Length: 214
Image 1 (cartoon, rainbow, N blue to C red):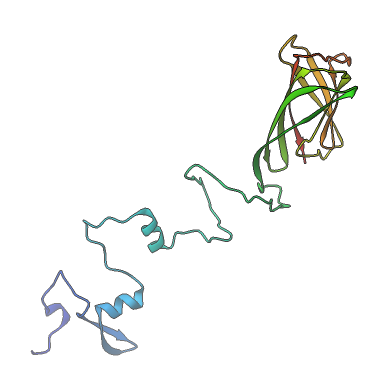
Image 2: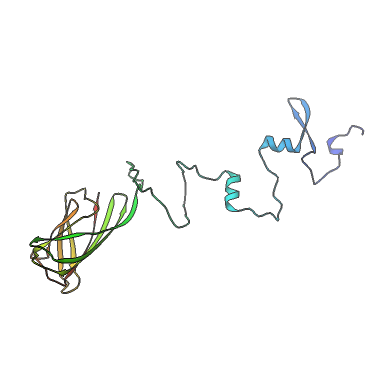
């Protein structure tokens, strides 16, 4: 075939990996196949219109997966419905970093300030977000026994950063009186009525809900 200028060559709309392209590099003219050219450019063939890819396949192909160790996101971040924190907190000193979330239950241990309670039922639950813990405690006296002088609840799952925190609650089964207590360490101490007198009898029930910083 006689030599021709490029603009004299016929046009084609389909090419294969073995087809050859002319390449000029530093005044040196050479040839390269389509397959070699794709390898050099790091590209793939355009998918046929009928081909369907999953989001994961597209993200992988485009390199959009976040690094596993320290992902960085901008704008709105959405999830499939859950964000999981490790069982053991990894504390952060950055004031804008949320480093912990936890939900749980516990069994409060109720005693009288004087005498002995014969029986009671009690339950507790908490939610921890960062360094703030919200707790709920309920207990019902099923037999007051010789108990008197107010109540104490032990076995709280967290101690407050501040040594003594005032807590309010309510008697929920009989007269609805407002109750007060003090969170100290992992205890609710000196649980009494709003006027600082004991409110203790069989059949009475009490509920407290409060938040602390840990």
